[in-house]
Image (cartoon, rainbow, N blue to C red; front, side, top):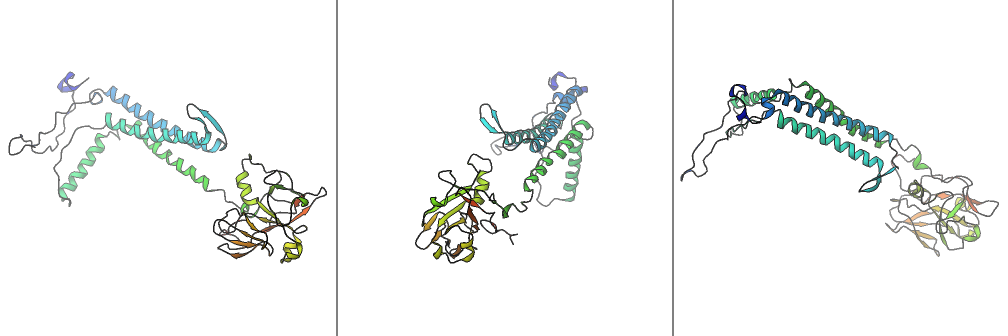
Length: 352
């Protein structure tokens, strides 16, 4: 339905607006202002029932946004982060990430779609041409701006369309809760997690290459072996987190060549176990020089003397590698006699 089909007395009254001077193109002024085309009313301007349908459509979009925001929060709280779902045609995806992305996208889209539909169907669509004015506004221009603002507020029907207003405010008020919920990932505080590893008394040392427990006889003088705690498998969910703190270097040194008294006491027949994690920035140490008993971090060349308490002899590392106290059980397997007595890896701000 167009404005041509409605009697003139049923059409809304036209508002007076400044359109500027209308000219006719000629040789002297080929780009004269042709003026604005006649304004054609929308169906919502003519039929209140159509306007109410548009109002309900906008309110529905804002309500969907509110429900999507609630869904975002519910997904964040209830869906386990390790759960996966199959989504055609993407395949298997993380269920939590998929739910958060879907609900957040719907919440944002419906707020925007509701605002656009509101503007296109219910707000005034009369075109206005206004003359340019100097950058410094004159008092009468300021007064006109405020008057235009009041007219715009009136034309938006925000006060009269209470259903739209209330649902829009509800959608805008609930949506920021999505960002607030993300703050949950800032916690909980690590507590003492940085000070402890998986190692405990009686836990066997397992060869990283063969995945078999180590016997004292398996470690030759001058050799370098990497070990992990018994029970830690590569398919475990927390494998990377735990191995980053619990990885060991196993080296056998002649007892007479061990200079540090505590290192000798914590070893077994010259077999010493030190953290593999460099105390500079946490790189894995893997280079061993058997003649000098030095180990080198390949990242920044920090060098540690394993015959003297793994103290730093070169490079940017701030402190020695932590040593794990080990022994042998009744079956001849190497076992831990406790956890490290100091934090593994780089220093952290609250380390004491």
